[in-house]
Each structure stands twice: as structure tokens, then as C-alpha cells.
Amino acid sequence: LDILKIAADLTEIVGSNHVKLNEPMAVHTSIKIGGPADIIVSPDNEDTLSKAYIYCLENKVPVFVMGNGTNLIVRDNGLRGVVIKIHNNFNSYKIIDDKIIAQAGILLSRLSKIALQNELSGMEFAEGIPGTLGGAVTMNAGAYNGEMSFVVQSIKYLDKTGKIKSLGNKELEFGKRSSFVQKDGGIVLEAEMQLKKADKHQVSEQMNQFAKMRKEKQPLELPSAGSVFKRPEGNYAGKLIEDCGLKGLKIGGAQVSEKHCGFIVNIEKATACDVIDLIAHIQKTVKDNYGVELQTEVKIIGE
Ligand SMILES: Cc1cc2nc3c(=O)[nH]c(=O)nc-3n(C[C@H](O)[C@H](O)[C@H](O)COP(=O)(O)OP(=O)(O)OC[C@H]3O[C@@H](n4cnc5c(N)ncnc54)[C@H](O)[C@@H]3O)c2cc1C
Image 1 (cartoon, helix red, strand yellow):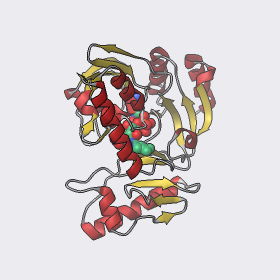
Image 2 (tube, helix red, strand yellow):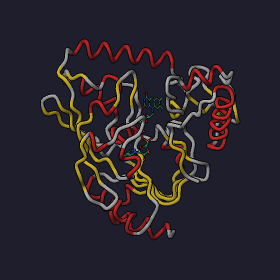
Image 3 (cartoon, protein in one colour):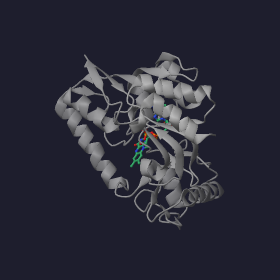
Image 4 (tube, helix red, strand yellow):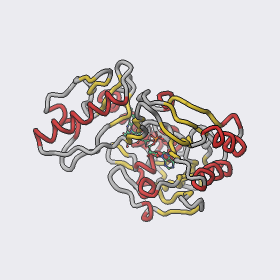
């Protein structure tokens, strides 16, 4: 890869303020881990975003799309090629009756506040999920019996051939922390959420209750990537891990959270290697003790 040439070409497309070279991914992930990305671009509109994406596809430059980096473990040698970050620059939204239509970079926590202010119910579950709307659609993020698949009616989607399409709820093939977007690898540009008119106080109360539960149960004070594993059928990853006696176990700077065993926290300059070794150790121990194969929910990427 001729990184300087690619960076120069992308600068032409998105402007020099929106391109960074050799950028540590630790700065862009909630667990604060990850080697450098060759190039990270954060376009500020749909037009330059799709042009930059198409440029990468046409020139066979590896490209990874990210939102707020709250579900990512980037390996220590970083990412080759281009990272497209869809975040602060894609923040706008509008409300039409009981629908919210928003751009992919808006934070889910903000979206649930917007729903509350507009007396709309359906986004309460999302008040404490730290990702973007695009990341949440891709991951079918959820909590407390709610998930994106219940509210997303359609999305505006840039596919891998560079075409903009509308995909409906069925076409999104939502599954357990998965969706068509994950398989297909295109870009969520916008999503339309169908909500319900509701009493503001009830919505607010529900959100406060969820926030309280989260604060009590999750290690929000330490860097993490949220739940490391998907919930196994008929069980809880955190409980299985705790029952194996792994609570508080450390490898290097990574630790099985003392507060919630489904989380791995970065307590002291952990490397991606530490986290990945800890994940492998947990998977093996849980398999040996309970015959359950834990699958990762976090995305492990890079070299
Ligand atoms: C403290 C904490 C609590 C959490 N609690 C929850 C929870 O309760 N429930 C839950 O489901 N998750 C939870 N998470 C995990 C995470 O917040 C969600 O998975 C979230 O949806 C990820 O969004 P993101 O913008 O950070 O995506 P990223 O981590 O940046 O990316 C995640 C995936 O989405 C893809 N992606 C991101 N944006 C786009 C886009 N615009 N178009 C196409 N693909 C895209 C990426 O390629 C990647 O595969 C938690 C994380 C933390 C740190």
C-alpha cells in the first residue's frame, strides 16, 4: 500500500482537516487499546463520505468503518489501510410525528434523550449504550429487553458497490447482536426509528431506572468495550465466568471485571494481546467446566 499517495488522494476528497496518518486507535476506542491505523478519515458529509469509500473500494484499499469505537478491540500492530470514522460529523436528526430519522453518527444516549424530550417511547433501553446509531444498527445493540430491531423501520445504506439504498427492517436480518450490515460490510448513513407517543414521566422514570441498574452492575468507571461475549442460550456469560472462579483474574493490564464478569477492563496499560489472551483463557475455562462455547460480541480487528 502506498499510504502517502492514498492519504493525498483522500485529502483531495475529504479535506486535510479530516485525514490523519498513523493514528493510534487507542485514542478512538473506549477500552483505550489499539495500535496505529495507517489512515483515519472522518468525512463531514455524505457526499465526501461515499466518495472516500468508493475510492477505497475501487483502489482495493482495505477499509474499516467505525462509529464511537465502544465495541472494538484493535490489535497492537494496528490497522492497515483506511479507517472511516462516522461520528460527530453525522449528528443531525428530525422528528416526524412519532418517528425519529437520524444520521448514523449520533450517539444512542443522545437519541434516547431526544425521544424523551419529544414524549416518545421505544429508545429507553439505549440511554446508557455508548455507541453511535450506525454502530447500534450494525450490532443490533440492546439492553433490558429492548433492542434496535424493535424500533428501526429502515435505514439509508451505502452498499459495497457504492450504491445508496433503503433497507427495511426485514432486509436488515437482525439477529443476536448481528445484522445484514455486519455480513455485507456497507455503511449505515441514516436510520428511521418508529416510536410511540407516551407519557414523558413514564419514559423518564424507565430511563432513570435503567441508568441506576447499569451504574450498580457495570464497571463504568474503567475503560472497557462493554460485554465481551454474546449471551449464551439459556444462560449468562457473566455468571458462567464468575462460577468458574475467574472474577478479578488478570493477564498483564487486562482484568475480568470485579463488578461484572462479562466485562474485561483495562486497569493498567493493557495491550490487545493481554485482552485476547484473557478472552481465550475465559473461553477455554468455561468450555471445560460447563461445555458452553462463549462467542465474542466485541469485534477483534487489526494486526
Ligand atoms: C460501558 C459499555 C456499555 C455497553 N453496553 C451495551 C449494551 O447494553 N448493549 C449493547 O448492545 N452494547 C453495549 N455496549 C457495546 C457498544 O456500545 C455497542 O455495540 C454499540 O452499538 C457500538 O457502537 P459504536 O458506534 O461504538 O460502534 P463501533 O464499536 O465503532 O463499531 C462496532 C461495529 O459496528 C460497525 N459500524 C459502526 N458504525 C457503522 C456504520 N455507520 N455503518 C456500518 N458499520 C458500522 C463497525 O464496523 C463494527 O463492526 C457497551 C459498551 C460499553 C463500553
